[in-house]
Image 1 (cartoon, rainbow over the protein chains, first blue to last red):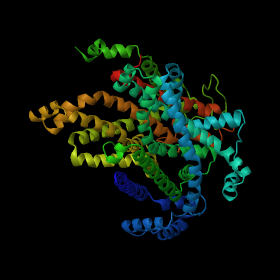
Image 2 (spheres, helix red, strand yellow):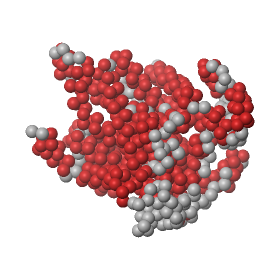
Image 3 (tube, rainbow over the protein chains, first blue to last red):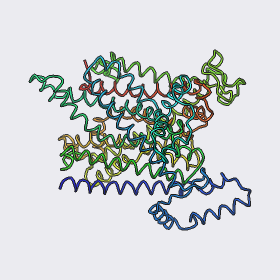
Image 4 (cartoon, rainbow over the protein chains, first blue to last red):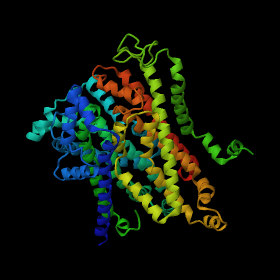
Length: 330
Length: 286
């Protein structure tokens, strides 16, 4: 029964996390600013028109009601999947935009996180074992980790579409529409062509983080007393490294959920640079085009994604590590 | 005997002296800081003086070239370093301070205080902080160095707090802490006199870690157009993207600020690694 009570506790924590995040994302715009003023400024009507439009929007969005009532309305709206309308995209419902973007995000993120995790951890473990490899690899890893996602994306775009035009400079948005409408082989191939560079940018940067983390975890295990003892007993280096790896991999599994959080924020810039229509692309546009509802919708879905990922990781940890189920380790 | 003399005689210093990583990374960090401090005196341009010829590649007159509008990129970069670095330092100081104080209180008090702080840490670890920073930065009326530093600082202390908490709760059970309480010392006195000296080296280390992650966050927010000033390292790169610097092939526009960012953050990482090796003999190799 250990597993079930553990899962129940986790669900409890994540419910609190979700409502905290929801409330914060809802209250910041209302305490610090006025979304209506932003919309009016964008529409740019005259003095008299501005007042009429403001009172219309105040009523339409229910902003003239007391704060607690607004909050309840907001939660009710969420239950019905109502996230408001996008100003930047001329009145398209945010929920519709965000739902499509979520699909494209999952197609981009899930492979990126799995591939970078596998390659990064393998490289890190190898670097910890072989000094010569370590000497070459370590500086590269530090530089990759220190590179902001947007910068690496720009470098890849500059080198691979301008200097050596292996990939097209401009990607038509129809490529993405066609994939959803008709996933034929040709359309999938077209999509993958557009998908590859954003994917590569995400993988390269996060790979550096996994590898340097794994490297120091492995060194710690290999220098520990049990490794020394196995060495004295005459175990082969390979087997000792095998045992060390099993210890070192645990924090890396825990890190998966948190890494998705950084990957999502990295994707905001990467998707904008490559015109990849995921949540990040819409979020970046919402920021530079002052679109309060689209911004809120993107943030809510991103938070939901991260919480879901953390939850899945928690279950995986509990299944592979009995100490967590029983509650001895955390 | 002064602190420096004691340091020079110690084994730590002998190890530090021959640690190449430490000296190389320290030099790069100081070089970037120096560029920010003295760079503005090395150029006759400011980021706001149009030089006439737009889109010029690097030349003796314009070491980093000029951008789409004809501004000198070197001037933009050196003024940008000042802004980005200042926000990073403010954020790192705030985050380290909150993290260390809350971590020490949670670790030493235990019980309900610990449970509350731990839950807050867990919530903050499960929400990507940059999303909340974006919201705050957008809706703050003013975005100056202090405001941006504050926003980033109050949302970045969770890792430090967690690490300090676990170190302190390990020290808490030692006999000398009990002895200190028995000799009539108050909670605060125990915290300051018996706990803090034990984690002082870690506090310094976590400041450097915070600084490297804060600078990464700062330039990312600047790239989103949420910087503390019109001219900052991230803002230059954003302009380069928005005005087609990549398809036009104006590589100097984004490459030079980019190299500065990467060099600074990578050196701070390596500085942390080398200091960890100095403070913790178990991590030394060879």
